[in-house]
Length: 567
Image (cartoon, rainbow, N blue to C red; front, top):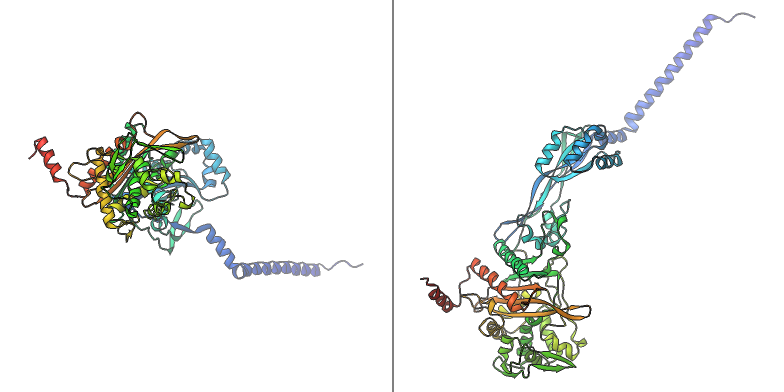
């Protein structure tokens, strides 16, 4: 057997090597073609996903201003702290220093980062104080960065808290007008593409995708000065009489503009998480009360409109009580014979019930309904209550009687102010508004002649002999009505009260209408004329002067000047 030819074996090995190399080259070329041609779009997108980012451009929320342009809510630029979890976890020895500045346990910080280790972005603290942001960045910890945002700030704090509401951490309105007008105030965030390095830091801005659209400002009808004064007086009254809460609404008679709306207790909207739930509600809009005797002017409007009585007609209220369907209705004392006007002056339950029971139930219901009771006012305020006014077909005789002096229905302070302003404005009812320069045509609900008669009758309430003398304002004629209603509990009405006063001034040419409600006053003084009327006088006195409303009772001013010795 002959030996293998060495030359032939060398040729075979050479061809085998060349074939393997050729095959390898073909694989490499094929792979290159595949990557460059077949999968180029996928690879490009993957690369951009790692380095090219689309990030939001934060937009500034519109400011909320009072009627004079003074700021009530503004957004200011602040920094928020974020981290790249994977990078930050590699600096574990520095976590305790960072956690200390963020006021959290180091173990909690490490746990949050570990749970989100697969992410590239984690918030550590939103909207921080500039000093804190500076101190955190001074640590020089890799993976920790700042992001610009905006924070909502309320210069007037608890004074306007329930009206304005507040925003959440993402700047969305949560309560009040911030919620009602969120789409108006919010604006549209922009977007841009940026190149970031492996640590998440922006190294280059590539292009603008969408421009940022800032939110629009909202100018309110509120007067910040009057709001402060009303809040101060309400707070003082609630504390003086050890009451549970209180509300005040002041409205422009001729426009329906809400000039002031305050509640107490309140809360600080700059730190809403610290607010007590009892202070979050805008009680003037959301809470209802049985109005008591402040409803009597509207019952009297029904009496006058039905032609049952005239202001000068005499009604015998003796012996100061009357029986209706087995229920005793009482006056504070036996007033004997009173004119119809005196029924309001003295706030006689017996007299007003006697007149109301002589009319058709449908008519009384119609007048109450026309003045807006039982319906929302249309402000669009979140959570606004419509109150309760049952259909007249369901009334019994006793219910019709109690409705004459404010039991069996419920109203909000805003509804009551609106209805009072309608009497002051010659029987024209307007929709209350919080937004300046809103078209607000009135609706006629009472004959102007009857409205004027009713206004004159209400004026006697604040004059000597009336129940609301403490609501009188030197130099101004004041019309109004006191109210004191028992609060209902699980077992019926108890010895807790709601004191109220509603009225307007100057009576000769009404400009402002207001309602004061003091809920559950303690101590021996709980009547509306004792508790709510003085607050009304102080707030309205300030309001009339702020709006430069001339006095309409010059004789009283001259007497006051002579007594004080002023020229």
